[in-house]
Length: 329
Image (cartoon, rainbow, N blue to C red):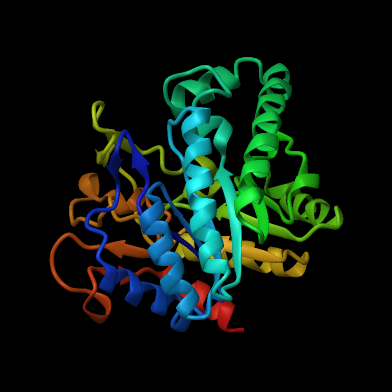
């Protein structure tokens, strides 16, 4: 399971507050109710990642320690990684099972690999001439990863990986896992299983991260873009409202996850991290135009007011039950 400790952009965290008691209870629910054995901890605050990793390790979960830089320069990314690598090593030395993840989708999420001031500008530019730019961005990324992995391994002595997008053409010889953000859309559904099989056939253990879909009808057909139904504050980047009329479809989200988990099992994937437990800044609201949970990949819908499941501020969606049933088997 992927668990958000707070995406950080321009110094602001998308998860406030970060309540230690709540986090510990949610991690226990992920282990006990969802039957997960490993946790992919993402976020931009090293202290939060270290805290959550310690609590997860105390629960016996395998910890994938994953700093998630957003709109940083390569120097800033490297500083984040080295800080987190030292923290992850301290945890590993206690006997915890820890994997270090040297970033997620770095080429589009950060500066220095593609032109553009934000993710959308970088993506727009990338697909003007994708074939030529794929090779160029992959070269820049691999050069950076050479340095990043060397610095991380100097501080962290466990297994290391990187959560890639397929076009990045990562050189996997430097890593212990092949890790791919792999989301099925209607465009690739007919070759999706074969693509997973090809990844596994490379011989190195394969981890799948980033897979899931939003909670509106039809979102699974455009899953990599299914969050693009939200209007954002131009200054802060915070989600504000839904940009049109969409029908809630929890059953569709649950079915999508169930189908992908079955494929990953059938084809011999080593680890599959559902994206994600909750998106805390995409709350559920009664008015569909304000219901940000429609765009959320979360297995739970976050409530703005009132207590929910076990007194926490969320309720499980159908996807929660689907994932729990699959992992309990």
